[in-house]
Length: 271
Image (cartoon, one colour):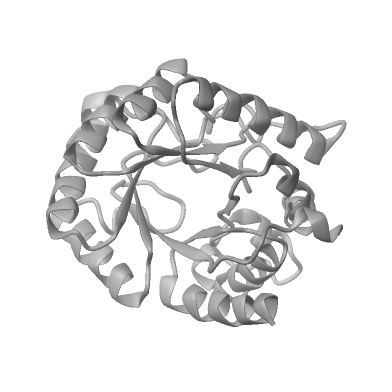
């Protein structure tokens, strides 16, 4: 990897996942109640989370979409309570502008959009609120994204998409932009491994990179064929390589373990 694609050293931030959903692939249903989601969020902060990513709709392959009001009913009380506590930076994981608008009003400061600002209104919502955005690459929608995904130039196409959508965000007045190659979203296992290996090439965008490999199915494609609950070591290996290759933020379920790995990799990068 060319050294000029690796950004200057900055301590890597860890984003903890708070799924307020009944059907997420890894922990669906465990934190659907507001009090359970809040308890989990507080645990993640204690474990070292710098950012909490709160989502009310599963984005697992094959997942059905959730109505706007139902999503808001799930996430708004969690965002409001955590914002009042001021425990961490709050991100709302949504592609619906109305959900983002309300959660930003309640105290979130970032929108994590798995569709990469497919709805132009999302960029305007973030820009007006002075919020940051995470722009993720995805082919199709969660319902269909794993239906035989193919690329002629995997990394080139991901970079082109992220560059175009970052431009859309800038035009809407968004100043803090993070890009995400979309591990597990419209990619085969081989695509995901290649993206992590070549992550440094996204440095040409000149933007912070977020990577979310946590417990995903590409880790279960290996000979060990482990289920999601047993993919911790694989997740941490992917986290370590991603950070070494320039990731600024890693999105994980297991914050304590990831924080320890990141601390070591950051020390190596800094040396």
